[in-house]
Length: 214
Length: 223
Image (cartoon, rainbow over all chains, first blue to last red; front, side):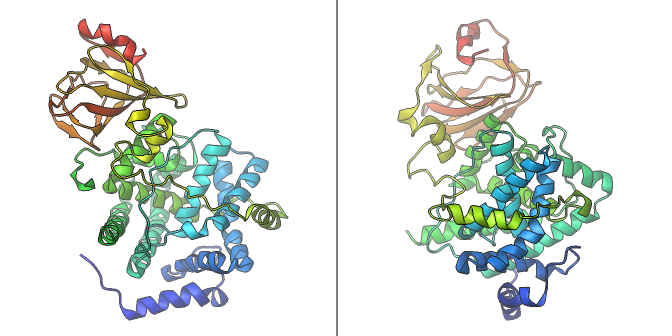
């Protein structure tokens, strides 16, 4: 089942991505409606295309205290967390061209970079990663995939915020702490299935594009 | 190709990998399976999305104020290393025709020909991979038609087929399939007759044997 994107969706994403930051400052309370979340994609675009320090400064103002807080919750002291956070944010700049908005939100991408840095720097362990998909010139992200994935990421964030506190706390400790996977709470009730289906679809399109180009 | 996989990773292990709390040997199992399985790749990325949602929604009192010169220091880091810092975050796909996906090739130093097998009796060979503490990862070579020693488990053992196939009492496992055995399970995997079977096996505790014959092969399991 696919939802055809309306022309309006495409236009509105473009407006948000390229101009939205001038009209809407990131809201520190995170109460902004979902289309504004696409804002950060525009920031990554500007960092990648224009090496735009203003865009980076806005991204930094929002995410740096979150990344540092995440690292401190995971057991780093303040100095370690600051150092590690700066490395994470520098990585976001340097690898902006690798971000794929049809498969992850900007928050998810920053989370994965921070998590890997935590394992590498703070725990000094090696983390084997799955091999990359065979990216090619055909693999431009589909705008419909981008819009829907970003909307679903926002629904997930909202669902998480709406969880009863005890349950949310368990999920949080599973990710921020060092619980063993036996203790990890069941994430029942969170709309993970919809995100999974969306990512699955994007992967299928990618495979299809790759096969078609051979 | 990838949709033929019938035995997948559990939600618990995918979530633990996304959270970054799995040890290296089990992480290698996840990375290897996901390299072959789009279904589990999508499930894994949805658990990454949960991590992103948690980071995004982190309470104001759990956010940590950054150092005064933090942004300037970060921009200085970027300026100092901007050139050439474009390495991908994930290994490139293994060449076509490889038996070992890229994460395993990194440990072995190539494809099958680079594995340093050690014979362990009855034609079975193994190669222990160097991973951190907490669990052991090994490659197993089981000649076509051969039975693995009958064994039970103290902890969790995960076995993923890379080449050939095997069956146990309950099911059949081919390339990409993962068999997960726990403490209650006693099983006797038998490699299919058509091809030698190569597997990645990860164990988080010693195996215990239940019959006399396989004791001959115990050294291969490095108990």
